[in-house]
Structures are given as structure tokens and as C-alpha cells.
Image (tube, rainbow, N blue to C red; front, top):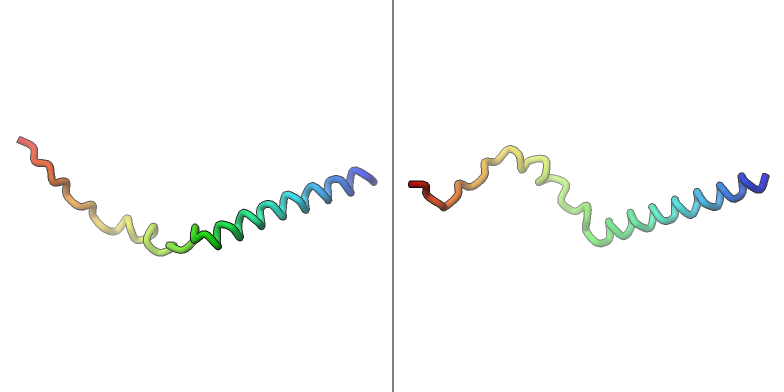
Length: 53
């Protein structure tokens, strides 16, 4: 029975750490730009300015 209590405490702690990391990422702006990565592949790269002889 004590093993279940230990596993429950550890799992709640790990879930709290992941929740804290997620909230920190949202607050710091990690998930702000969700449009451009999907549409970036549709645009060509700018040609390089170096000329080959």
C-alpha cells in the first residue's frame, strides 16, 4: 500500500513540473508564432547575392 502512495506522490510531482514548464513556455512566448512555420515552406528562398564565374 505504501508503494502506491509513493508512486502517486512522484507522479503528481512530475505532472506539476511539466505543468510549470508548459506555463513558463506560454508566458515567455514560445508558442506565439504558430502560422509561419507551416506556410514558410510555400515561399522560395531569396537568391544568393554571390555570382559564380
